[in-house]
Amino acid sequence: MEQLVTSPDNPSPAQSRTPHQPLQSELRDSAAPRRTRRMRRTLAVTALLAAGALTLSACGGDAEAGGHDGKNGQAGADAAAAKDASDAKIQVSSKDGATDASINDTGVKVTGGKLTNVKLTAVDTGKDIAGAISPDGASWKPGEQLDRGAKYKLVADAKDAKGRPATENATFTTVSSANSFIGSFTPDNGKTVGVGMPVSFNFDKSISNRKDVQSHITVTSSSGQQVVGHWFGDRRLDFRPEDYWKAGSKVTMKIDLDGVKGGAGITGVQSKTVSFTIGRSQVSTVDMNTQTMTVKQDGKVIKSIPISGGSPDHPTYNGQMVISEKFEQTRMDGSTVGFGGEYDIKDVPHAMRLSSSGTFIHGNYWGSSSIFGRSGTSHGCVGLQDNKGGGGSTPAKWFYENSLIGDVVIVQNSKDKTVQPDNGLNGWNMSWSQWTAGSAS
Image 1 (cartoon, rainbow, N blue to C red):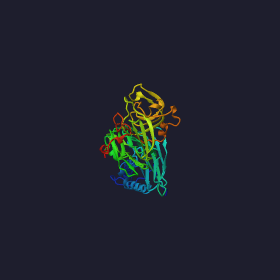
Image 2: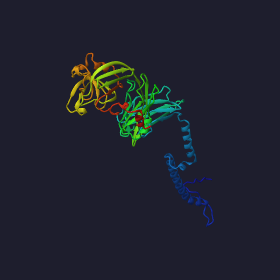
Image 3: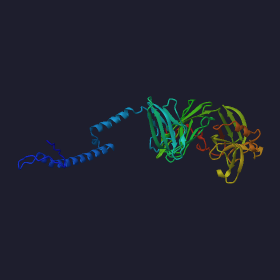
Image 4: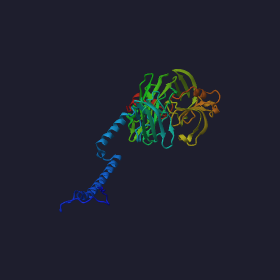
């Protein structure tokens, strides 16, 4: 019997049925297109939703969009990253974004590892600030003091024992000149000075918080002498013992003002230790009655020198005065100290300052030799016989060469008043009780 093959062009033969009973194949054929269309729509919507879910997961959106596995996967990744993190912990002393960073204490420290590289750059100029990592790799310091009011960028790298790297960045600005204060001081580090030399600070801003500022400057002596500070106004602070320093002693000054509030809106920036040595004791006494100066070293008279002090119209100050500056030659112009055009000598030899207001002990080559030891002829200075240009062997040259900054010159029996304690380094003209009364500590 011939086989029938069904195809769209050759449909299956008809089957017998009751007049009102449709064939099963007809039911299937009529329902299939509707089911297919519904399934296609469902699959399309499902695909769109799935794509949206993937998009949200990829951008780190809704945590639920990734499903249970996505949430645990992120937590696992975080845990893995933390487990593999370097043990090296870097700490920069100047905080990122700071606008009042110290100019002295900027540095880097690390625990759990060693520093491998530190770079500090001045942002405005691009200059790299040299520094050094400590031998143990635990810290780094710049090799120079930073500028005030300057912006810096620091990058520090380190590695732990397993070689895992760590990096820290910080950009900061040091405290500005307007918001900080500095004290210029004398004497300088390493100097040898006379027994009368006080420690003297002159601040560039007015200090209202005097107690804190004074307490962060300590002056001690190997002699064991008590040293006390005294304020002359709100910008000057001097330190001295009750009596002159002991010859041969060493004086140490520790300045710890970095970060100390000096007043409203101003902070200290200095941090250093300074030391100086007290030389032999030399105290010279000028007697205006005899116009003679007697020089004593370590309590013994070593020389008597004729002088010419202030005239009756312009007497020399009385009192204990400390040599604060020495000049082999200098100009003395009367107009700078209130004497108009009375004198202007451009080459005064062997000059040593005794007061801020212009009192000097100096060589005099223009006066007759007959005035020395006999009469006062100066405008308040103490003159010693000398040669023009300072050459030769003269009393002025001898005294200059045998004097130190900090040596004491005492003037007595003058018709003038005693020099003010703050006129030069002359606080020795105050009693000890007066001196200590001016301390803020």
